[in-house]
Length: 278
Image (cartoon, rainbow, N blue to C red):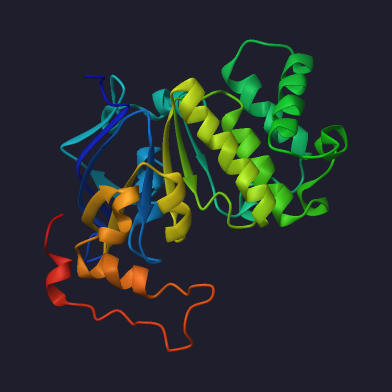
């Protein structure tokens, strides 16, 4: 049996002096596959993704196991984590407005990823960055390379972020709503790029999303999170056969093209959902 890329056992995260943990007892493994994590805002999806990269300053992160390949992430020093972030594990963030440096040209920020992790010239890094910008369907990448973040659209900024995170050919990509700012055509192109990385390069992909239809059609497995816990795990193709009432409630609350005009279902939250395990 192939060894998992990522093993997470009993992950717990608490922010500052909060009385309640933001993530409680999350356990899962990731192979060379596409794993979706879905749930409402505040359920802990993005917190889990950032914890894997140790990008939660001020938060307390504990786990029985938090292993990426042969590395136990919680025991690594910050210097060692710098060698992991970007090169072996990267995260595509949701909003490029808060992720791109406003006073540096877009292309230089993308090329910096390659310069940081590989021994190469600036010319070689520039060529790699231009090729990746073209790969994420940016027209006229040489022009975009020279622009500043405020000169590009939100959708183009998202593609720039995706190019930046994929440039170093990581083993694991965490995609936090990576297509939220893209139109339908470009969304499909970006998903095809991510799918090709999983299929052709054998990486692991964690897709964090509110979009149940996207996860159903793109991912292999799905974790459903509620209030910091995983309440259900199932194959993406079986999402319509979910058993947990929270998952069924999320599915019922989705509008359907051509559906009736009756009010959408509203979740009837139960206290026991806070404590039960998947």
